[in-house]
Amino acid sequence: MTTNLRLPGRPEEITVPALLARNAAAHGALPALSWRTGPDAAGWTTLTWSEARLKVAVLAAGYAALGVGRGEHVLLMMGNRPEHWLSDLALVHLGAVPVTVYGTSAPEQIAHIARHSGARVAVVEGARELVRWEPLLSDPDVPLERLVVAEAAEAGPHGTYASLYAGGVRLHRADAFDKAWRETRPEDPLTVVYTSGTTGDPKGVRLTHRNLMLQAIRLDRHVDLPEHAEHICYLPFAHIAERVLGIYLPLLRAAHVRLCADPTAVAGAVRELRPVQFFGVPRVWEKLAASVRAVLARLPEDQRAAIEAANDLARARAAHRERGERVPAALEASYAAAKERVLDPLLGLAGMDRLVWTASATAPMPIDVVRFWAGWGITIMDAWGLTETSGVCTVNSPDAFRLGSVGRPIEGVELRLAADGEILTRGATVFGGYLRPDGSLEDAADADGWFPTGDIGRLDEDGFLWLTDRKKELIITSNGKNVSPALVENTVKEHPLIGQALVHGDGRSYLVALLVLDPDLAPAWAAAQGIEAASPADLAAHPAVREEVGRAVAAANARLNRTEQIKRYHLLTGEWGPESGELTPSLKLRRRVIREKYGALIDGLYEDPAPAA
Image (tube, rainbow, N blue to C red; front, side, top):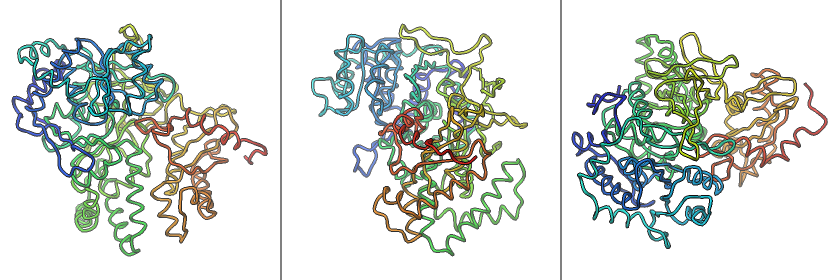
C-alpha cells in the first residue's frame, strides 16, 4: 500500500472535495501540480496543495458566474495543462459534472457528445479546437451556448479562461465555496467519460464519487510507492486511466502531478524526472522497447553480449518471483551486480533507473514486450478494466503476478465467465449505466448486477485472468472457426521489423494482414544490413526488407494453428496514429476505420488464385 494518509471519512463515503480539503489542511506545503509554461521552457511552474485548492475555489466562483450549477455537464477539450486539471476540480466543487472530450475527436463525434450531454458550456484550448466547436453554437439541435478559450490570443469573440478566473477572484467567497462542496454526496456523479468510439457513436459512462474513490483506494493497496510520489500525466483526461492516475489517485495520495502537454515528449520527461512510477498503454511500451532495441542494435557485439547476459539474469529472477519462489541467493547476488554494473547505467540514460512500479492496461500486452522489459528488471504490472468499471478490475502486483496475464480481481470486484468466455463483473466500482440524452441512465447489467464487459478471457487455477480479445472483434471464418486477431497480430509483431498489424478474415476462408514497418527499428535493421533507404516507402519496397518480413510472417505462422495463420499480407509505408484516424486516442486499433480506409488492398489479398491450405 502506498499511502497511510488519514482518510476524511469511511472509504465508501469519501468525495473528491473532501480529499482536496484534507490535502490543503494537512499537506498544504507539498507540491500538487507542475507544468511547463511553454514548449521551450526549461523549468517548471508548481502549485502546492494549498495553492491549488485556492485556485480551484476561485475558478468555481468564475464558473458559477457563468450560470454553471449542480448536476450540469460542462465539456472540456484541452490538453494536459493546468487550466484543464484545475477546471475539472472546480466544476466538481460546484456539483457540476466535467466531461472531457478527446482532442482528436472528429466534428461529428464532438457534435454527438455536445448534443447527447446537453452541455451549455464548453472550455476549449484554442483556434484548432474552435474550428470544430463554433458551428455547434448555431446548431438548433445542440444546447451549447458558450465557449471559453484557454489561449486568450486565439479566443476571438469568445470568453477566455483568464477573464473567467478574474471574475472568480472578484466573486469568490470562502463560505459559499465550502457550502457548495459540502453538499456533494458519494452517490453524486463525478464525471461522464465518453468511450472512444472504436465502433459507432461514443457512449456516455456516468461515474460517481463512490465509484472512483473506491477505485483509487483499492488500487492504491496494490502499489508500494514512496509517499507523495510524482506522476507524469501525459495520457488524455478523456481516458479513464489518466483520470484515475492523474487526478483521483494523486488526490488520495497527496501526490505530485507533472503535466506533460505533448504526449510525444513523454520520453524526454521521463529522462529528466526519473520517476518511481510509470503507466503506459501497450503501444507506449512497444514504442519504448523499439527505441531501446534500435540503440542496442548499434552497439559493439561485446557490449551487446554483456547486456544480453544481464537480461538473462533479470528474466531468471523474474521467473522465480512470478512462481512465488524465493530467488536463490547466488542468482540474487549475480543479478544485483549486473543491475548495478550493466542495466542501471543504461536505464539511467532513459530516466528509468528509479522505477518501482510500472503498469499497463486497455489492451492485451504483447508477451514479447513484457519479457523484454523483464530482462531490464522492469516488471510491467498489467491490469484490465473498462471505463464502465471505473478503471481496473484486475491487477498484477509485486507479490502476485503472472507475466502475460492481467492479474487478479481487486477488492470488492467479482468476476465470472459466461458460456462463450465473455468476462462478467460486478461490484461497487461498476457504473450505474449509460447516460441517456434526457439525463437518465440505461442499465447495462443484468438482474443480478453482472455487467457483460465484451472481453473474452480465461481464469487459471490461481485466479489470474488471461485476456483473449474483444468479443466483437473476434474473427469468425467462413468455416465457423473463431480467431483472436490480437493473438495473431501480437505474434507477428514479435519480429522487430513489424511495428503494427491488422488481421482480417471475418466470413472468409483464410486470414490476411496489413503490416506496418516499425519506424524506429526498421531503419536500424536496414543500416545493420548495409541498406541505404531514404524513407519508409523506400524501406518497404526494398527486396531484403520484404524478404525479412516474409520470414517474420512464416515464423509467426509456425507458432499458430492453421486457422490463425496469415496467408497473404500487404506491407504499408506509413505508421498508424490517432491523427490519421487508425488508432483511438488511447492508441488502440480502430479496426472498422482501417478496413474502410484500406478496403481495396484487403479485397485484393483475396483475389484468385486462393493460397494453398
